[in-house]
Image (cartoon, rainbow, N blue to C red; front, side, top):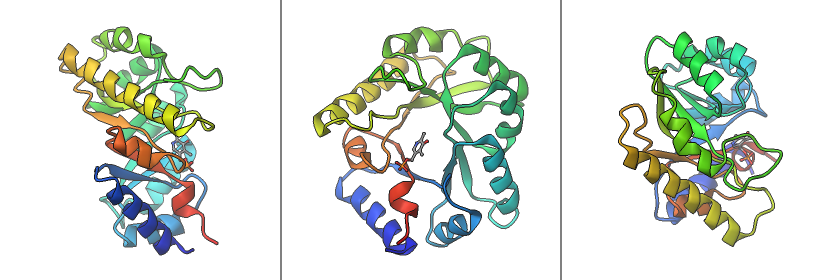
Length: 220
Ligand SMILES: *Cc1c(COP(=O)(O)O)cnc(C)c1O
């Protein structure tokens, strides 16, 4: 299948769920030529997981395609914040106070952040434990440039369908728990969840952003 077929397949699978979300095309494994082709198909949101690559691609494309919206989805080193902030509209991986502090310092306006949650408690994954999320968000008050637009999770790769439903439902519930705090800094209306393996399930559970790479960009 080519890129056009992949794009049609993914968007149709999303439509078939009866729920809508913003598709973030994860282009970390491909070059800017693929981004340009997806752009021509109407895609505007793109995700990258490495700071250098995001800033390079953004710089290469921003003049011709000023309406591309960039998402930083990888784990973010504090020393890379300065470079990532001007390039990315969303950061999906806020997971520690030291990072919030740096974002607050380097940003000249509110920055859209997702707090990353390790819902399933996997040892090898980044993100806060579910019970840490509310206390963490309450601790962000001194960092007003950090705006918690939502929560993000990656589901376990080997989970059953039932387990995936549970993980995504938990993340969605957590967004509502944060909303209930009514913090101006944390509207938390968004849920960034779902990848190639599991985005239809994430949509059913209320994802507002799905991050799809492999299924979209693998051409054969
Ligand atoms: C790579 C990546 C994705 C996309 O995963 P696919 O399985 O290729 O769709 C989504 N989110 C994050 C954080 C990633 O690193």
